[in-house]
Image (cartoon, rainbow, N blue to C red; front, top):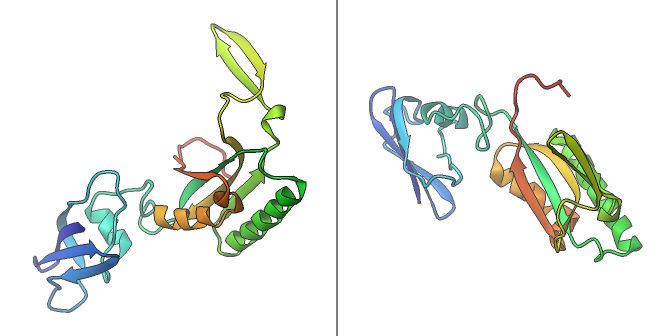
Length: 198
């Protein structure tokens, strides 16, 4: 259970509780739906998802809890967050027919995400037999054939998406065909100044 305590504009305490998959608000202001002002604090464990109570805007929670952007809730209240979905799997598992079917399903997912305004990029990668690794040590460039590390599952492709929060990113990752055979790693993207606009 996750508890948020905030004060509305009349000073009444609002407890927003998330338990058993549903959100409940208590201590509503005299006008019904609370409009939150003043200080607040979050009693949720660090690193866990933030849950937002019904009737309290996500942006308001973000402002009152000091969330100015990042992996939960979007920066600036309601903006989408970029996530990189890294697709890992045993590259020997799929034959040519299964691989082509996977490409078709992935393209359909990309089209659906594009229609929803959440698609940024996606592509499969050639197998690790085509990979090269580069290291620079003491100003010397070292190039070797093969991936950076030999692992049971190899990086086989990616989706770059925008989502409201990590829960939505998880839902999208679960729709990637290779999630049924391998692993999709979800990483929020850090947006830094000075990069060219896409």
